[in-house]
Image (cartoon, rainbow, N blue to C red; front, side, top):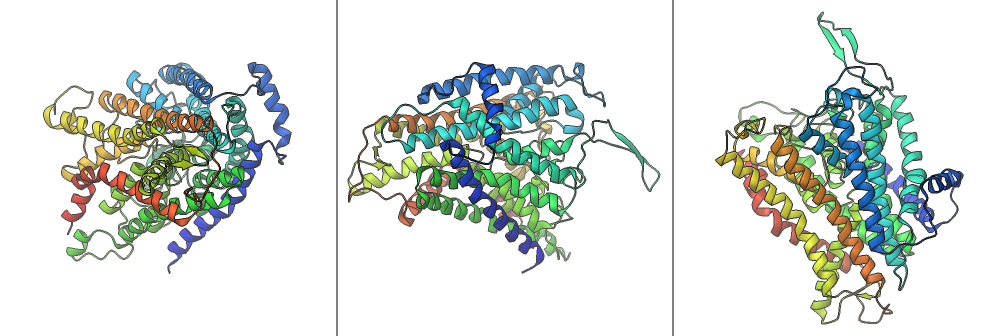
Length: 571
């Protein structure tokens, strides 16, 4: 076993070692038990008093969703107008211009929904003000939005019969003060002490060894990079994201950033077990997610270590794998590990160029986003997984001739209709978006979208199709990574991807919370000999099968036109 593979294994084990106690801590926070961060309580009380919030007033699921949607609508307008007029705001030492209306529309939505798809370059497309007071602000609140929505579901699963599911604002604020802010602070300190910029000065000017003059962008990046990973946001300070040496200076920062983007998605699964006192159920869910992740991880690492067979046929040796576009300091295996971990979660940060990956690797990355529930993002990962649980329980009930039950509640037609619509929404918006863009490319190649469709793609044929499919998969999964060969900063892509991001964010939050709220208000049915056990390997296998079948039926034809066809064309 080489050191690259050893490093990957140790990174994952370190992540797991942090995620389990973090999950226990998260459960204690939202159960109202004492924790070592109780000293934040006065700050929280001040926020609630200042905002006129009574945290003792409990909400039903509809009131939770109304609060979530209204505050997010407010943040959307705030972000849009800041980006539209950023050149007139302070903290702009490099004199960066305003964003165009379509780019501001895309960027504001992107950061609001935890996607952070960047159709601009961070150094030139944003100012220090918007990086901090728009992007970093949204990094915190978008992650807290997902966590708060998940805690509503936790509460619905915990109580036997209720429509009182706690207070949204309490969940939201505590997600920031007790989880995101303290952990992000620790990460930012580590990153800053390892060479990541923290200065508010503008570009530095250097003379290279060749005698050329170079202008080096910098800025207070460490704080943003910490929460970009911890909150599974992914929006980088620099255009190259964590492939930029100032945003990822060394192996330690690379490991810290990898661990950071996984500990909350993984920790929330364990938090479910501690919160409900059903640890075996959480272990089953975690096992399914981990097997799914490995299903994408192993082929990707293998593909990147072996390199391109077309080059091998030319008689060129590739002892280190396919290195073009990879992180040369850490090797292709590490780049492969990062690319999967960032796409099975909704992080979307990169330490290599995904467009340069082997076709099999691109297939696995898109697969992670198309499934969108193996770990997933902060809160929304399990919300997506919950939809598949409902479908699996319903199918299992039909197979044995019983009314499907989950945690003592009958799953009936209303819940299944919601679950089915949410399960179908994800492939619908990805495939419709890809179909429209393909039609425009073929039939309207010279249309005036600022950039002509005929020049959208860096690569023709199968890979060009993959670039468009990847863009909508990333948008729908609120991921934000991309095949950067796509020329996406134009009216068509900014607007179409913007709508896909909104639909891909909020409907998959509303649907699971609605199902949980409806079930929580039903009569509780004690377990009997005929009840399907939810903490067994059989249940885990059933869920895994449902996920794979739905994903395969939805996406195989489109994948066959892109990365699968490209893979076989290399032989």
